[in-house]
Amino acid sequence: MNKETIQRVYRVTALITFTAIAFYLFFQISKGGPFRDINPFGEDPYDAIGSMAIQVALLLGILTYARALRLRDEPAQAGKIRLILRGNSLVLLAILVTLIGDGHALVAHPLPPSYWGNVLRVELTLMFLLALIGVMALIAVFRPI
Image 1: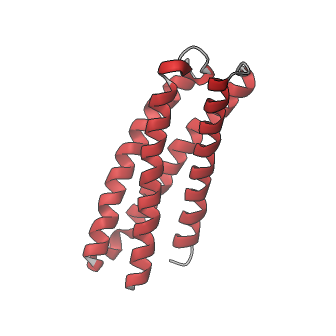
Image 2: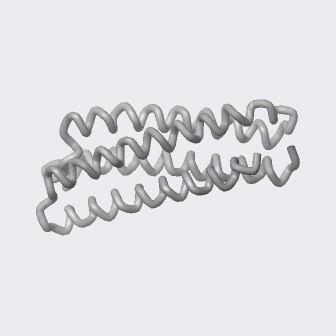
Image 3: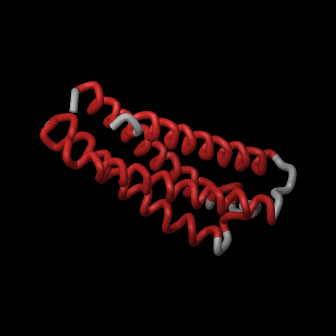
């Protein structure tokens, strides 16, 4: 495996780990402050899905990033590239499952028209976009491998 491929794997893993951290922050922020009273996905079962998913996404994101960092420093670790692919895939799956559940909550229990309701919608939309960018980047990097 050449250095350019390893660098691309590292970059996509860094992007997905960043997405996991952003997802964690989105989840925590949406449960507190002005969102607490209007957040339809702050109640179970939506909250239970997100509570488990943030832990899975964050833990796997950090572990996978560590593997990609090691691969970048030691190209002999190329045999573990499948673990990096699987880790990144599971991070994105955990995020997307939660976001789909949150989207369902918004459809089932629409937010009242308000400033904070709009902020919550924008945050959810941006998380969807960030996750989809991660999926497309992962496919683009790992397909040729």
